[in-house]
Each structure stands twice: as C-alpha cells, then as structure tokens.
Image 1: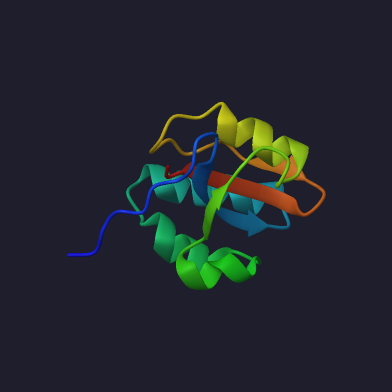
Image 2: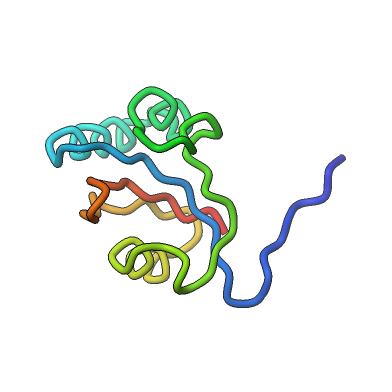
Length: 98
C-alpha cells in the first residue's frame, strides 16, 4: 500500500476547477453540492493543466499562489470546497485536500 504523502510544515494541498465565467463556476458549485465528483468536474470543465489530475495542485506554501487563491485556501478546512474565488486567471472552485 503506498504511503500517504504528507506536506511540510506550513504547506497546504488543494485541487481546483478554473473557469472563465462566474455563472459557470456557480453551476459547478451546484453540481458539487448535488454529489457530482470534484475530480470529474475538474476534468470536464477546468481550463488549468491540473485538470488531468482532477484539479490537484499538490502541496504549496504561502507566496506560491496568487493572493486571492492563497487567502481562500488558508482560510479553509481540509475537505472544504470554496465558493467561486476570482483571480486574474478566472474563477476557481477550490477544494482543500491537505
């Protein structure tokens, strides 16, 4: 059985779905609330290359992501899914995974 990967102190892990429009982000959030898989929605809708990994961005620390994204992730609990977060890249639905 593979060992569960752990981050270093101060690191978090998250997945996201990046889309260009708020209306699409809101629709995805509704689908998540109804039980649709985050990974499947990331693979279908995200415009980030991470979509191939279900939106997984791996571990990162403060200063590695844009400010709005970072603020959202660090305020979330593991397993929580954000409301749409606007950055210069578009709208993110973020799931904190570690």
